[in-house]
Length: 427
Image (cartoon, one colour):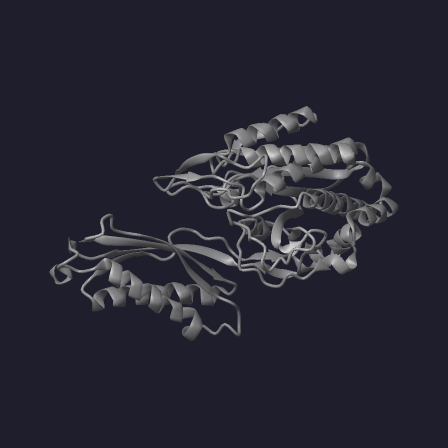
């Protein structure tokens, strides 16, 4: 269904809500998104982004709180009538990715990441999420006298994970008390997604996104000249065998008919010269699961493979499996999701609200879902006519957002908020 038709349906069903989002606000949201896209910042370093957000919230007459979990920003909107409390969340951080999309507002930014100078890009769409929530905040403030309840706007840093040695993200927001003085009875969030065409929304009850854990393995050998491999212990060869053996965890050792599992090595770092066998090789990667017992089983099996592969060749390993606290499974509260699905259907049509199935990507929105009933949904980002299966994925340097997704995401999140508050008032 084309966006124009969807907007007509929205206007007919809820004229007050529709009236608050017009072409002028759409233009603002697009401009915010493009500005943020051109000036991306890594996790816990979103200083400029937080400043843009806080200034906008203040201009709306709200009282933003800043510096939460390093660079997080929150503000509370109090409606004109008593009612429930809800929270709306957007993430603000970018990724260490060098952009390869030819846009007039493409990122040229660089930063330091794991000791290296890297390009920085909003390769996951968090610029869109931030701009959308800024727009929803403006729309809700415009109709605050008619709202029954209170809304917490939650702009979160470091969803992609904080820098090594730091805390950050949703778990730190909660640890620092973001729900202490304002405890919502429901939390909503969205994510633009390349696996869906623009004009569609993905949502499902129960588990949606996988648990995510990072691991680190250092293989320690003994340095020697490349012409005399027998004079040392080659950690590169051991690492290669370890990686090969680890693939059998998923392909031969886990019952993936029960739930899917992924083990991915994302980086290998070792050696500096063509004719020197180095002392050590570092391997880092990620584990994705949906079942807690399977999650722990993968940790155990990967540790065993690393230990025994190294020992078989006279090497040693230092394992951090997992390396830190990972993200839990992102679960949508079934009753809340069923209740709010009609709000999403009104925006894009019932046929365009899809079950995306289990998604191996992860989200630290899952921490909020552990605290209160939550609903997280996907907004299609790939242009119509482009196969989302072959489109550049989120986290790709070629990730491309069709900006019509901004309009749909704004209206969807706004509708969910307004409808929830209105339904609670009616009850």
